[in-house]
Length: 168
Image 1 (cartoon, rainbow, N blue to C red):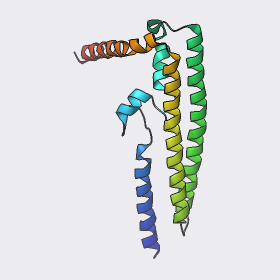
Image 2: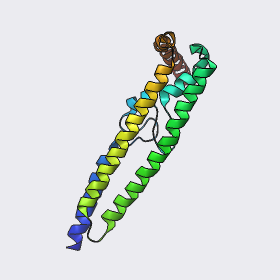
Image 3: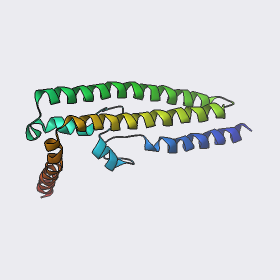
Image 4: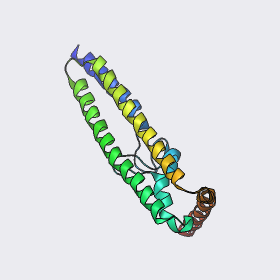
């Protein structure tokens, strides 16, 4: 019976791994790489709004005003601060889930509730990122917004040139 329960718990732990498969991971690995490239990484190592960061990095090309820079930095810092809190909450819920599943008689209903709570925290994180991106985009003038695709194209071309130069 203990062996059966051990196997069952093992399979449940493996199953929860699939739930966490949507979790952001290090840049360039895992699922959703394209989305992370466009939206920025949201993980324990780097809480940032990718587009806002790009706007700030292109402040000269976009001719950002001092006020726009101040607003974009506030959006970025507010998002990062909240992201750190959300990540801490997620870690705590994961610890609770592990503790629940390690019990001799696991409470499967509680485990399901913890998994649902983790999913909700992930959802809130993604919505918060979209909201911050929208605020950042709306901080730009129409002319600056229109200039973004050209800047993106130029940066992509420069990246390709640099990448090709490295291979030789």
